[in-house]
Length: 79
Image (cartoon, rainbow, N blue to C red; front, side, top):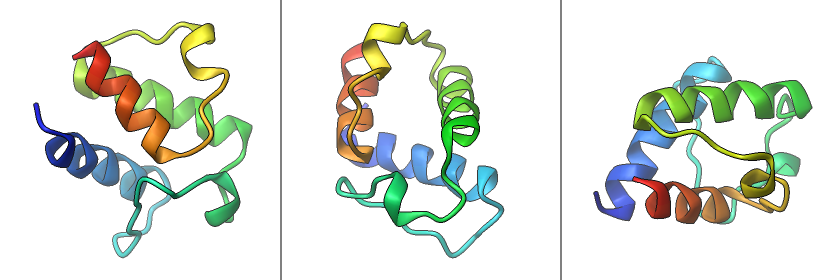
């Protein structure tokens, strides 16, 4: 799976979770860039990504994620 395919799938998850069809994420997007992205939303995003890709994150995997780029790299390593 290419990074573009992963990004497209993750973007769909972000749009669904934040209920915003116009939301565009990049590798540099972080929680500060999206108003409603709080700790609860982080859990919802990670759960949806796990389900979509059939993977299971460990706390150590997600603890130091700084932005969407880190998240994409993590997913790419796990699929």
